[in-house]
Amino acid sequence: MPAPLIEPVARLIESFARLPGIGPKTAQRLTFHLLRAPEVEARNLAAALVAVRDEVVFCERCFNISDAPLCSICRDPGRDTSRLCVVEEPLDVLAIERTGEFRGLYHVLNGAISPIDGIGPERLRIRELLARADEARRAGRPFTEVILATNPTLEGEATAMYLAERLEATVESITRIARGIPVGGDLEYADEITLIRSLQGRRAV
Amino acid sequence: MPGRLYVTDAIVLSRFEYGEADRVLTLMTPGHGKLKAIARGVRRPTSRLGGSLEPLAELRVALARGRTFDVVTQVSVGHAWLHLRDSLEATATAWYLAELADRSLEERNAAEPLYALLRRAYELLDAGMAPGRVARWFEMRLADQLGVRPEVDRCVECDRTLEAGQRFRWVPPLGGALCERCPGPPHARTALSLEALKLLKAYQRLDVEALAALRLPAAVEREAETAMRDFLRFSLEREARSLGFLDDVRVGR
Image (cartoon, rainbow over all chains, first blue to last red; front, side, top):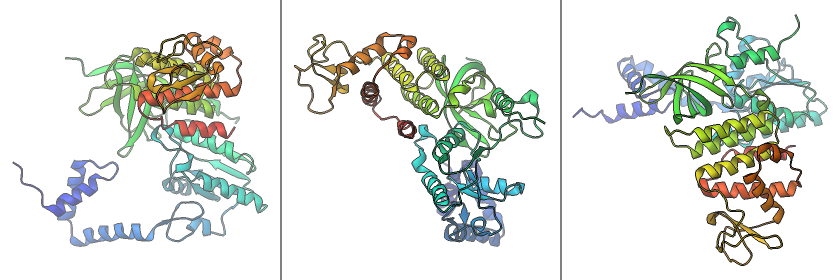
């Protein structure tokens, strides 16, 4: 009969194994790595975990992660407040910010509509988005463009269609990010649906 | 012993994200019924499988048998039904039908009739048939396939023929319509108009072309919709989760 793990080790393995993408083997490896690593490494990790729970909140306006009631983007007076980019997750904000192409504001939905999983519009930050667009219109500064940058999955597309219908009356224009062949990709290996969508979205050069 | 590799037609019913860039898919296949398969690296933009492995398309999938999940090795799209995805109501209806199919299927049990039914329903949605009509047509045939065809011709209690001029009630726990003479159970019964009863009969007897051509008051369609939803909720023992979104989409019109 194998020797049982001592309780603190078993508890850490179990905690790691609850994280997305980490199975029992990886959880064991991470735990034993921390046991072997210098003590300061483990203590830094523990402190970072506590800080992320204690100090990180969701921005009251855009629902991106923040260390203050309003996130650094919403607080930045240099941003173009007439354009709004709607994304599914805070990580999508980071991805778009890395491009340096967009200087407007964001709205993070915290997911996408997936009825089969029981995720309807009421589970996302859609009500807040509609209120935000309506408030801007009432203040005489309607968004000139709302960019729907949800993922090009069935759920992301349905979310974008739903938002386009609901936002139509309150914003000046609604756009959807383009779909097609990734840069560096190869047409020969592209799937049929991506190819069809890229042909549908072709533009004059 | 069956070979390690096999190829099948499939429709993705649902999926969830797994690990760094993988997805676990619930596939509906004609010969193997419902099965779970993993698509590795499929969430990366450069994945060769990614765009194909979306729900609401008929795929030709090559799979390798695995211990927990079978592994998707190749995929090509048979029918993409892209027009269906351009309408929010059609998409929401397709989701609802996928959920009903998912609930009705056993894993690894051949499901050719149900596969053909879902495939035909998606074809009809893609061709622009009214989503509500497609949904009722699908629900009625699904009930047939589950062996719980609703009784709309004779009283479910006394077996007398239901005739015009009577008042009817809809009683899913008893399996259909009840005549005015029979008391039925004290709960779980709602009034059903003659027009709605006729429409339910039409869904049992007419082909889809004839159903698509029917001109009916919205109130009668709603009554038939409520009756079939109640019936399937009782038969499948749970309300479909995707109905909330479907109703939300239609309210917004």
